Length: 434
Ligand code: GDP
Image 1 (cartoon, helix red, strand yellow):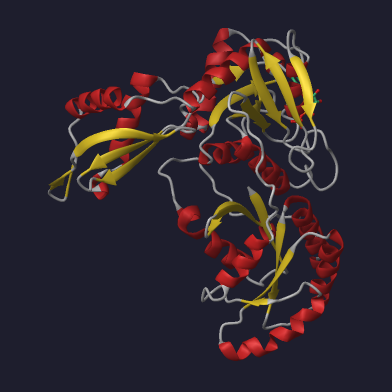
Image 2 (image 1 turned 180 degrees about the horizontal axis):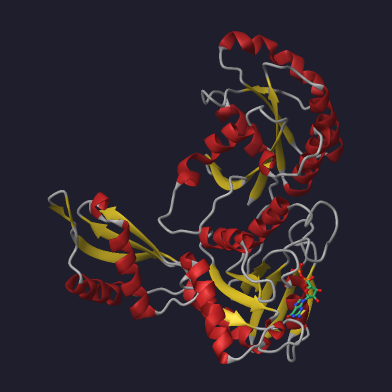
């Protein structure tokens, strides 16, 4: 999928444009505590194209002076994006900071679409010619707050997408990534996995820009470890800014079947861990919680139970994710990881036959009758699995509004009881029967 980044000074309207392009998708709230959403990266659509959008303004780079901040944001955009939307404020014209950024973008040779925001009325469009001087071709007058001109701008963006964007994905290969705070042991764990016995390793260079994926084969199963860049390529702005590493993690998550969420047993669970895990959950990937550095604590059964209880209470939204305890350093219990990845991946891609599914649904209805809302009773007619990765179920009902979150949750639990689905989220969509 192509990546589009929005770059521009503070207050030119980046977030407004970002939210417009992303649409409602981002404002979906889930009734589960712990899922935090950061509005810096989201999926957007235009005509037949789906792409990922980055609001570089949301990447906090500390208390740097404006010019430094903008330079870093431009650098991120240049590194990460296929197409850059360079946003200016039509009410203020071209400032020195804009020119500075323009220079960087120009040198990078990345496709740039110049958009001039806050052109709320037609008279203002006269002023658009001034912006040709930046050298990025036609400037697009837009109004984020009124939603004007966005279509033309998006046409230009989409037309600049690289044509060979189709990344090869091998059907029988399990793609996984490791995410977690700096120093939880991501690189150490990758290295330990690769050095395990009977693991055959080869590198896939330059798969996606600067990421280095690693292929391994174990017990007749192919895996690809998606490098969460910064893992191998240290330095630069990467791990030094939290949100930038989040960005890298998001891109890795997107290409993964299974995401390993690493937690440091030594330092315990932190707020940032939850945030990172929330991204993997939102993306609908299979998830395994890996408690690393288990060598540093007293590691008997009891300690494990206690730690797991803690994990469960912090990560309530990940109740489906198994918890694996290991030490990347001593390699203790590391052999439990690959089998867990296999199980999670199988469940993530599992299909349930409609008749079997409906037997379970009917039993569920008998145990816990459907609720009545404002005098109207929810009727569940039947259910069918509509997709995998994650397994998603359409439940046909008389009126979707009557399907309360808690009842959907109840059905989900019944489906889980019947079919397992350890390691994977599952989704339930109430649909009105035609
Ligand atoms: P990353 O930033 O997540 O890639 O973390 P690293 O793999 O660079 O590890 C950070 C630090 O934690 C290094 O000093 C490692 O040696 C140490 N470390 C990693 N895994 C373990 C472990 O299982 N046990 C212990 N005691 N230390 C570990």
